[in-house]
Image (cartoon, rainbow, N blue to C red; front, side, top):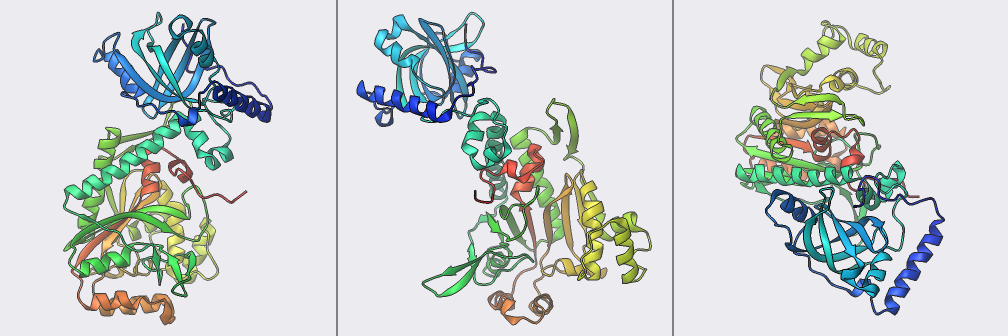
Length: 498
């Protein structure tokens, strides 16, 4: 008989201070016997899941000796024998301890181990009567004593506040959460592999910048004491990457943190991970191919499929995203489909009133292009569940892009929208230093101190034509891994301090 991993003796409600006291007393008792868990060492030779799956597949025969280490996540005391589950990052395996094998003193010590303790175990593989791959224990080493009890519901920590503030408990209790975080790591690895295989150079650029640029967002401000001046945590990577294009690095990418001193929401965290990539002699079409190929590559490598299914708590599929079919649509065409074919022929005042009547959120100071974009953000973007490249955005929205030759009111830009949110913007980069200065001066509203003169000087030395993209890693992971909140793909999301 073995422990039931789905119902491992749930901890009954008990005063936590009393439990902590009991665990400290157990630690003192161990030390009195000359056992100090925090000084012990143990070298495993096999991961838990490797031992389990190897035995199941026949790669490891019955009687094969293994040494594994991990946290105790379940136990069942049978009197003269005992079952425990030991779990490491790879998974779990059951361990069977017998008094007649360990001896009275050692077995007594073993039965006083607690859920959450770390142990190293050595023994031989066998299968129980119910078919469970297990280790028949020969020897064990206590490697750490857990002085606090595990969450009351060991297999499913549910309190949202606790899950985010004490993510380590979430990772222990919710195996699905750990799986998401491990897959996120795999996503980042495959992004790097994709760009390395295409000959891109990975770069690192400053996180603290004298002038925040590359996007319109409120920055975080910090002070450098030695230099006696303020710096800003970067809001984008773009301007330093374009300096590198000037310097002759033709294909480059960076995965790094950006910071925006703005609100928190299901899709926004003030600290987020961004990929930006630039290719000399490319354009927005080049970068659309790059985005599509990248996302397909990552999905296939990490998930093994290009069809992403989101399931509810009962396992029912509630949403399917097909990454084999990518649509292209012009921004203005989508606006006219939703807001009326005459949208761009009526007056600005009429557009404002119509947008208001539709229910768009219109600020008092909104310019005309912002009114149109409010309609897009409210009524169009959330409907773009399947992969869609929205192209030719208004020039006012992207001041660092080149104007479209066929329509100078728009720029050669795309927004890749999947799952009802923007995953990646990309565009043909503006490399005309005169035009770029004029655009940035207009954006700065005459405040010269907001201009990054060093960037503009770099452009005057000559930047090749290029295409560039940005991809929010957190949002990409939300889409690929079927998560509805950005907090569920970030190990330690930003929270208000207690």
